[in-house]
Image 1 (cartoon, rainbow, N blue to C red):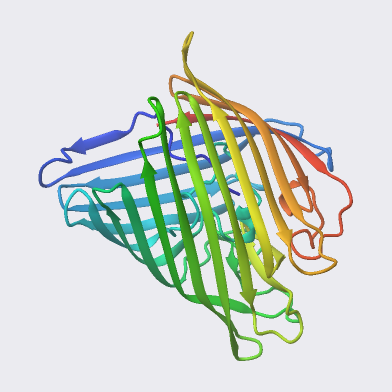
Image 2 (cartoon, rainbow, N blue to C red; image 1 turned 90 degrees about the horizontal axis):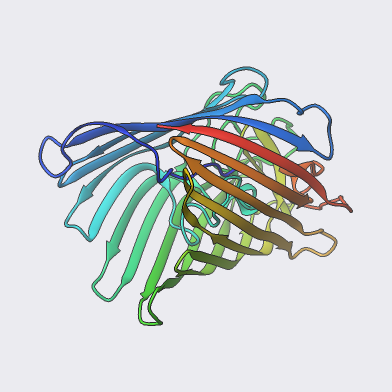
Length: 376
């Protein structure tokens, strides 16, 4: 589940000066509550604690670092908690950097492919908002070209959750099965590259970029002692016109799990849940948002719409989709979010256990998701 990107109006706590040594140390985060109304259950009609995030950042002229830790409530307060990021970086200059540790991988238009606070279906397929352990170079050139190249020997590991041994993690990765009859896969040696090109000559008040990314890795089949491959690509565009924003992404996921038993699907997991995912498919995400700034006492009000789909290549597999229509509003240090979410063959939105693989659902499920966050 993708959740809350870095809030633009939060007031961080900091000491020091980032422009000189010994640098600046800052703390920020959020506390969030939710109310949900789901079409598939009557159990969630109450306001509950949802999540907390703590960020610790260090900045100096040459060195920087970042730690992000989150906890969520399933049954008890913070019964699922996980490290999201933990990396250090070095600035060669203002345009070229290198960082090492647990960090977001450079695939798709950015960490998040949309402006809502729930995320698209590709967060569950394992290509959006993925944080793995490795090293990454980032460079921006005078031509407006941005290049990111990363190598990740493995994923970020699992942490603390009440249900699953290996799926207690923030990012969706290949995980160790709870059921011994299911193949155990592990993704290693991930080479991921992203290139973006700024386009700043279209017209006044318009800024945009286009880009592409590529993901190649080994899929270690630990059950049968074989090795397969993943090849994935994405093309994307980002357009801003005054207060209007459009993000569009299209790509393909192609996994060979070297498995004689289930060659068309693989076990993945995140947020303390395991699920099978179709190995091959084409994906689409489109996000529209418009920002109204300084409306009365609100600093920003932003309606948004997202369309996301994973169109599976295997004959007989039904597509998975998630669409969101909603609004977010910033008032002082509070963020209010209201989203109406429609999913089909989406395990997170009431779909069956085989949602992201075979997909046995014939109808949509929906959820009203109301959130209030205190940002600091």
